[in-house]
Length: 252
Image: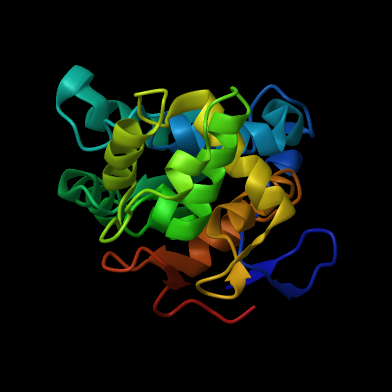
């Protein structure tokens, strides 16, 4: 994707999107430059572990608690209201969600159709864990996490993981095998994944940088950006959720 850098004044190839709120708000922290919506606890704490103090980067993290497409507590409506607020404040919206739940997919497509998203969409296929890590890596991370508590990590390593291809299936298998007898989730699991990714930034299945690391990189550019350029030149493909040049948009 081509992004116009406010620092260089020329197009720059990058996998992330930048925001113009520094110009709009004088570089203060009264309003975040980027609001990042994440689906649940694991991803929230993984990103928080990376950013440490996101507000200093102009980033506001929002934990949607797995309810993007849910009717509970009017979650879908609240997301829409927040996205509308982002538009009003000329603040980039970044949405990370798992594609394994159809209600989530429908909810995000609805926001795309209504033109409510200016920023970036990270559609994890099928979910955060398996979009960013291999099964072998998840097993090793979980085993090491248990060992940190004085538990037997080898029970995790030697278990039968054949056919496991989703975060939910992995969590079920872990809870049966681990001496914790609980699913890996929340702060500890998110931080364990982030710590591993910092040391091993490349996904062995793809040979490329892990997607959520690319997203984290985006946040460091939150104050140096061109919101209007993004809004005027890019839209989202409702099938792939990738940003594409808006039909008829002039070349930079």
